Length: 237
Ligand SMILES: *Cc1c(COP(=O)(O)O)cnc(C)c1O
Image (cartoon, rainbow, N blue to C red):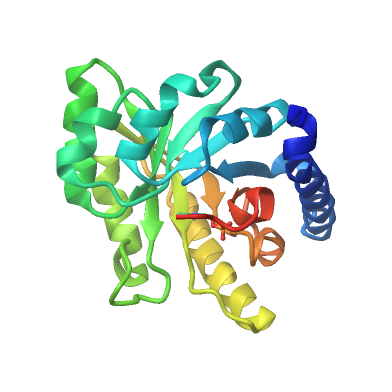
């Protein structure tokens, strides 16, 4: 089978996704160029990652440090940016700093300090998003909405990181209205923090929306969506 045949489903999926993105962007007063599509590549082998890059996707997201380190030498890194989107443990920070252009999953001040310290050691600053646990779920990582603004001020004071926005994974609901409300609440927090014009903070990225709910997320203001199964099909662990 030629590569194109083996992977043609992926190209079709991206085409359909782009139509939905363009439509949702239009209804939220923007264009498709305002929305960045990230391909979430956890469990996806390097060949398929490279194929997705050949289809015009320019950003990939990896959840696990170990998996990315093992795959990265086979990925066409000159064709994409890579963001870390999974929970980061303190003892893995050393391995990832300098290898991704952003860490979206910063879920505590403590991990932010660790990222900053390791970044400064290699003479760089690392772009981060603060992950928000929008419904304050007990089993989820992230800053709580009640203290998000205060946490943003704390993050702003740490040398070695740049706070660039918010990432969130709201619980998926079958009811479109509930999804929209969650995304709207995340957007409100994003705007609140923007409006404070905190020194050293430039709130540019609102990362929300996955395969099952990205249309709702865009309608509520997302400018970066993270898609795994919608692009690659169901994950095989
Ligand atoms: C896996 C994952 C995604 C993508 O999930 P799909 O439902 O397959 O699109 C997005 N964001 C994060 C943080 C993830 O872990």
